Length: 233
Image 1: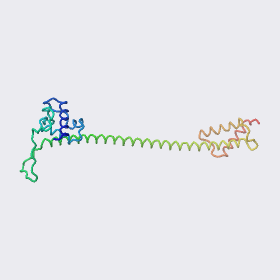
Image 2: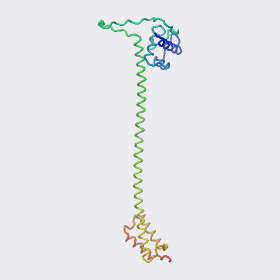
Image 3: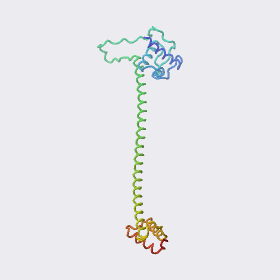
Image 4: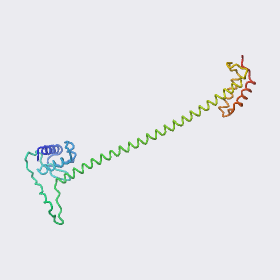
């Protein structure tokens, strides 16, 4: 075991001894301890755990690990549990015999599972954020469509009011021209009869009964002018 692996193993052992006493089973997973120590990857954590098991500092127990000894691993210390010799490549395995999985493979598998769980949690969080963004975008589009409809309706209402104002102005001009006659000065003040005629036209326009042509406006203005008192010169 090189110096870097020795340092990682002793750091992992120190972290375990801070969490549990000798003889107790570890409650945290190796992946959590490895992340807390800043291990570069899950494989480094698995190697540190295997080295501690081989030197009788940890042992598998109840799906986790039990602390056997808190003494740091010394440089050059031999393994108490020897590694299983590798099977010669190409040798046939007897029928029905199962290969005993080394403890290192079990630790590696546990570390891989922990990593997959973390990735699954991150994936679920990203999916939730994407769903929230889609809903916010849909609501923003709906608000934009509603604002566009309101703007279009206001524009149509403004055009309608402009048309009505132009029609009222035209009727008013025709009324004034017919009420004053051709002999009246353009700058002459508006008399009571003319004002009565104008008010009559405006009131009939509010009731939806405004004259549709300039002749009708002129007739009404003349009648109102003849029945009233002429404006003082």
